[in-house]
Each structure stands twice: as C-alpha cells, then as structure tokens.
Amino acid sequence: MDMEQAVIWTIPFLALAVVFEMGVSIRRGRKTYRTNDTLASLSQGLISQLVNACTPLLQIGIYALVFATLGYQAESPFWHTWYGFAIAVVLFDFCEYWLHRAGHEIAVFWAAHAVHHQSEELNICTALRQESQNALLGWPFYLPMALVGVPPEIFGFSYLFVQYYQIWAHTEQVGKLGWLDGVLTTPSNHRVHHAVNDCYVDRNYGGLFVLWDRLFGSYAVETERCVFGTRTPLRSLNPLRAIVQVYGALLHDAWHAQRWQDKLKVFTMPPGWRPTDVAQRFPQAPFSVVRERYDPPATGAARAAAIALFLATAVGCGFFLWDAETMDSTTRFLWMAVLLVPLCGVGWLLERRPGNRRVDQRAPGGVDAASRASPLPPLGRAD
Image 1 (tube, one colour):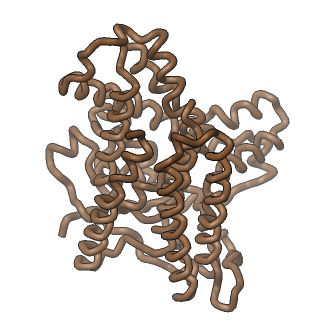
Image 2: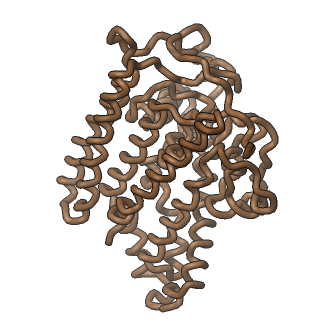
Image 3: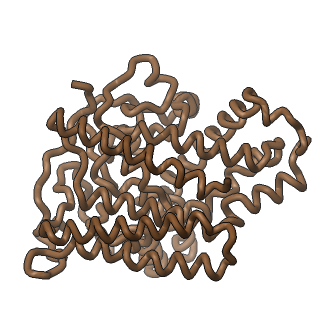
C-alpha cells in the first residue's frame, strides 16, 4: 500500500471526527464551522494530496537516493523494531520543528506555509488545510534521517504518525490539559501557534512535542483569547489565489526594490520585512487584531451546489490517488489540472452574492463590504 492509499483509508475516521467536533461545538453554542471556510480548507487538503502524487521525487525519491548511497548501516533491522520506530518518530518531529520554524521565520518558506494558516476558524478541517508547495523547499530538512539510516518506509510512517497526531490539536473544543501542555503539542499550545495576537506570533512550532519550543525559546502559554488567520487576510475562497497570495506580494516587492540586495532579502528575511523604498511607495495599513471574518453571504442554493461539486471532486480525487502510482508523470499532471477546475468552481460559487455578483467590494480600510461580522473566538476552555 502506498502513501496515497493509506491516506484514503483514513478518510472515514476523519469524517467521523469532524462530525463529532461539529456536534460538540453546536451543543456548547461555540460553533467553529462555516460552510465556506470548511470547503476552502478541505479543497486545499485535496490540492496538497494532488501535488504530493505528482511530485514523488521530492516526496520520497531524493530521500530514498540519499538513504541508499549515504545512509549509515542502511540494512540495519533496528529501525523495524518498536523502539527504532519510536526514535524515528522523534527524529522526524525534530526535523519537522525546524522546517516549521523556517516556514514562519523566512519569507519564501512562509509563502508556502501560509495556506495552512489562512483559515479564520480553528477546527479539524483546518488541520487538513495542508500547504501544497512545502515539498518544493522542505525536503532537505529531512535528509539527516536518511543519513543516519532511517529506511524510506519508516520515514513515511513517521511522517503519517506525526501528521495525524497533530489533527486533534486543531480545535477550540478542548481546554488546557495541565502538565501535558508542557510536553506535547496540545490544543491549547496549537491555538497559540495559529493565533495572530502579538504575544503569540511565531510560537509553538512543535508537531508532536512542544519540548522543542521550550528548548529553543519559541514556547508561549495560552493566556488571552486567540484570533485566527493570517496578519494579511486572504479574503478569498479561490484556492489558487490562496496558494499564490504571498508569492505575489514577495515578487511585487522584489520587482520594485531598487537595490539588488533588497531584491534578495525580500525572500530571505522574516515575513513582513519590506525594503524601505518599497514600503514608502506602497504603504500598507497597520495590523489590527480586531477585524471581521470573511464570510460572503452566498445563497442556500449556491452553498448546496458548492457542497455537491466538492463531494463529486473529492470522489474523483480518490480514484486518482488510488491509482496514481501506476500512472506516468504526464497523466498525473493532467489529472491534477482537471481536478483543480471544479475546486476553483467551489470557491466561485461560495463568493457569489445574491443577484449573481461576486463579492469583491471593499469598504475603507480594506474590509470587505459584504462580509458579515462574527464574534471573536473565545479563549479555549472546556466548559
């Protein structure tokens, strides 16, 4: 069974977890699901799987090559024991910590990772909103595992273990968990990570263990109400716009920067850094944590059509992913291109205003005039 098939087998369990979280949130009167936000997150999840299927060289190919040529005791049975697998998981989580930290502290890495943070809700579907471009830059971070001899199949299962562990941490329905919050990535810790509050930015990168954050100075405790999303809101349900938003901003600043050093630094400095001359010519509004969620008022018919289109596309993605390993590269890319079209259609339907006009008007200050105000999310407590 390949990685894509393993992911497909988990879909029923993920669906049950989503339904359960929805039920809990409704019972508590703390709803954290909206149709448009949920479909946008799930669309990004499908796109990430499509890209993974089309880039096997970056996903596992280079790792396997390094393992075969440079791996220490490449045939050692140690990694196939339970304790060998446990060590592999810890090694993966350590490598993941540094990739995740680069994703927040280096602009070009943030351009890929930002997709995961664009949702203005925090729920299990947010966990599935995975970035599709991380493989293009992220694969070198895991090569130390190949060098110490972790076999590719053990690396793959370590990846799945850490990724699936993190799903439960994306929720507002679980409060603080005492001493566990100081050791593991828990919902309280991960709410901090997804928040845009000044005291929370660039904190709690750990995937499985938050001990890395405590060791390397990036840990923060949840102390105030979290506001989710990105500091430059996406304000769109178009999945392709979500992917290219930050790249476009970086290319804009690099193009207009006068000094060649600044053109390079646009991509290598922390997110938000801008050359002085560019910032003066193209000023941006100051960040405010008080803002409205992007929630365009699509009709009931549009929402129903978007749900139906998404489900049909998800089935198509499932058939593709199940057989992707048997296809050549050209066929895989054709499948991906075809399946991207209806996913864009889902976003288009959800942004149609009553009267068949797309939501694109903006009020002064950059707030969409058609957005409905929503209350800020509460501080995560189990009540």
